[in-house]
Image 1 (cartoon, rainbow, N blue to C red):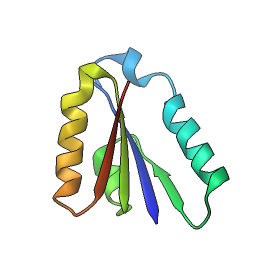
Image 2: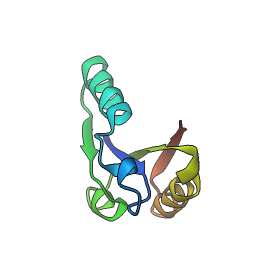
Image 3: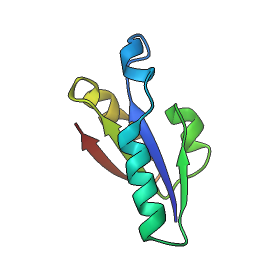
Image 4: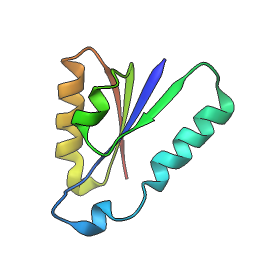
Length: 88
């Protein structure tokens, strides 16, 4: 299974994208340690990530960007990709 990780953020607000996505990194590291046979992909944009054709899309979002995360999920769902949203 190919699992894609995506962070919803506002590119106009540097504080949202200038720091590494530690939550996504933590989840990916735990999943790699506890499972086998999965491929993990992280890209900074939806467009780049969807090129990898993930089976599952995990989206991390702050409350202020939840609408964008929901839009990513809807777009992925139309491509038959299962999605999980994590709001912080």
